[in-house]
Each structure stands twice: as C-alpha cells, then as structure tokens.
Length: 207
Image (cartoon, rainbow, N blue to C red; front, top):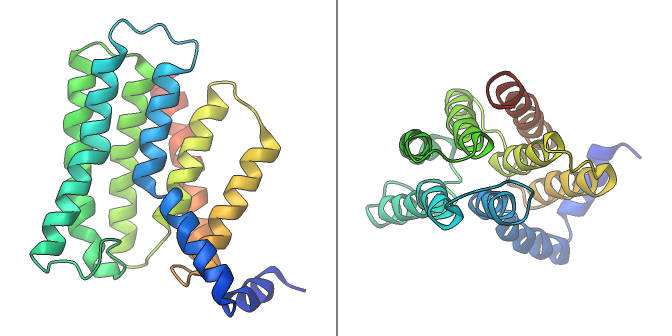
C-alpha cells in the first residue's frame, strides 16, 4: 500500500488524531529548541564558563519572547489560534521570531558563548527567514523542520544514533499528516529544509 494512502487511512482514526495532537505539542518547535539548547549546554563535552547565563539568553530569545508574542497576537485577534494555523497568519509571528533570533545571536556573540550555541541561534534565524519566504506561497511544516534541525545539530556533534533519529523524523512527519496540519509533501519539504539548511550553515560557518 502506498505510504500516502496509508496516512490517509490513519487520518480517519479519532484516537490516532488525539495521539498525534498530543505528540505535536510535545514536539512543538519551541519545546524542541529549548531541549536542544539545554542538552548541548548542560549535557555535552562542551566547556562553558557561564552555562546558566548562556542558557537563559538562549531560552529567552528562542522561546519565551516568541511565546509572549504569539499570546499577544492572539489577544489582539491578529491570529486565529496559538498555532497560527492559517498560512497568512504565520508571517507576522515568524517575522518577530526572526528578529528575536537575530538579537539573541548578537548577544551570544557578545558574551563569548561557544561557537555551536551561536550557530544554533544563527540557524534558527536563517531557517525562519527561509520558512517565511516559502510561507508567502506555500505552508510547510515547521514541526518537521525544527525536529530535523535539532537532529542535524546532534548528528554533526557526533551523536550519530541513526535509527532513533530516523524514527523521530518519521513520527513527526506522521503526526503532522494525521492531524491534518500538513500534507505529506509539506512535512517532507520542511524536514529536508531543516537538514540541508542547518548542515550547510553549521559546516560552513560554525564547525
């Protein structure tokens, strides 16, 4: 049975949609971003003089400010839901997020954070701009892009657990399709951009 046909059948299952929704919140881009910074700052071989400050800066600009912005935009009825599900509504939150990532990157450089931490914030900036440009015409999955970005970062750092990583990517693609958030192609394209864009930036500029 073709994969897309199989996913279409799964769309009709209420239980699977519920599970998919729960997993979508667990694998939300802001959660993934926070966990990525946390693991790399506190649980890798990096020698960091001021890990708490670096983590707080990373958390503030990559997660807290974007959350506050989304809540404000929702309160002002500028977006219809907290996920900004409509394609056109995604542009403004992403524009703000790109600005926050830029400021975060500059501050991380000023406080002499490890190069890889600066690189992650820089990738967040460039990837957000790429998605913003694409979203003007087509809605791709930010969930799959975010998970793929994180996996690419850990892979380049030497954490080459191919089976768990492929499984996580497959789960992310599947849940975005069965919750009717994206088509299969939109999810795959998001994943591909995350891998290609992130690996290119990190290898050329930060590793």
